[in-house]
Length: 365
Image 1 (spheres, helix red, strand yellow):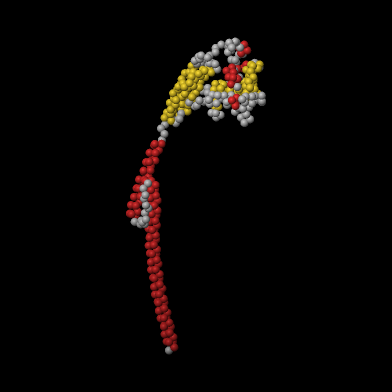
Image 2 (cartoon, rainbow, N blue to C red; image 1 turned 60 degrees about the horizontal axis):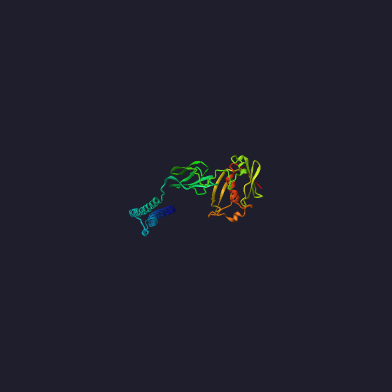
């Protein structure tokens, strides 16, 4: 009897446990099903939100491009074009708007490009091969009592870019400008002046023959102005520069001319100042220039004799009206020049006309 009671109790316990297990399984199943549905719903909502955000992002980007293109059109065409205020989601509408904006932009850019090209064509220089024509603008003129006959010749030049002008000879060393040459001729001399002009487009050449012409004031005798022969001058051979030497004492401001070591002339001078000193050393006279205007100093001078580079013997300065600058002339015997050796007009004339080129010059303190 007791055995049966115990057996029934065990059976009841088993039944209760079975029911509890089944109930628990059902609860767990139901919970799992609800969680899955909730996750699916949340995932679906997130996807929908992502798509909407993407569309909104595209719409904002299109508005930005539209505003930017509108700005370009305004600058290019000069017309006022407002930016788009609507969000563009539909791809078809986006394409239409983009095409319209690009068309307007292209049109405006095309107008600007055409305007720029026309402006460049108008401003473009026309290149031209050079040409040159020589003409005598002064001469024959005479210097040194008719011993020198000189001409000034002008080169009339065309071409673009401006051609470079090269004369075969210019005894003024460019004093009259880059397109004017002075040619000095001695008795019975002739010279064929050649002028070459060149630029990037080509070159051209012209020439003119210049002849010595006797003037009315030529003195062909060995007589002085008094009509009497100067025996001392006649005994000197001026054709050989080796017979002469020139000493310049800058301390004494004195030019001494020697013939065969005999002093024949002493000339007061003005060498350079302390700021513009005269070069010292031994040199040789190598060029004569009758007259030259020095624009840098706003003064000119006569009877130039070069002995080294930009250092020359010459007369006292003249102004632009052809008058001696008295203030400078009164400085003879003291340092006053820009580095050259100045002499009184008559002394410079004698020095220029009498002494041959190639004479040794010694300058010292």
